[in-house]
Image (cartoon, rainbow, N blue to C red; front, side, top):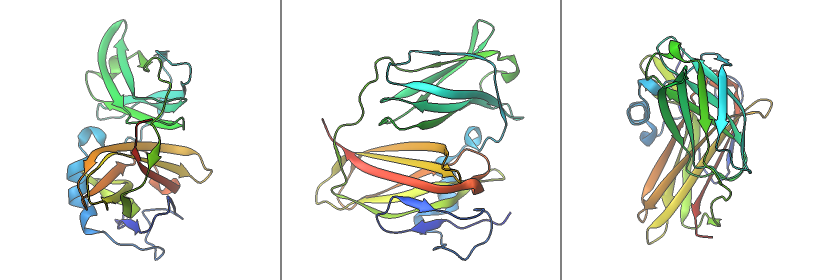
Length: 257
């Protein structure tokens, strides 16, 4: 496969429309690899063996959902595993504000492992999650439980983009992990104020051609100093990245209600 350089754009629009297979050579768009998006830096900073893309098909085993608040629900979920010993659960949450999802995997009545998927903030939009682990022997798993926080019923407070500028953003090959090219989204924002800005929230949503949401990721920065920049990396841990046709990116400062 030929490596496609990072697709970078500038300006303040919040979506990127992509045409065709991302891995195919193309003359469309501004194809370049900005210095701060270099493959080596991104791969080193973002990926390890447990987080490379998982292309295994999902399946159904016994499962339960606990602690669901009245405003939220997990509308679908499935178990998956690959031939390297990694396994997990992926699905979709739709509802109110959510801080985390716990996944507990059982062998009979005994707990094999438990892992938490943290979510920085949630505003009631669909959220696609993937929880991955490699603890224990996945062949012994016969059921799992997803646990949501009780009473989660409010989202982030009022927000503003004041003091923040989007310098560049794009979708493409972020880097490599082992022999795998890892696709995803990256964006660099800058504090343009003369003083530090705090509580910066970022969210990216990826859609395939029929407008189906296939991936959601979020980030949070506690503080940026004057003129300081921050690059948000969001690896696309799914198969067939060439099917992604639109990426929506939002960023803002959280404020107290």
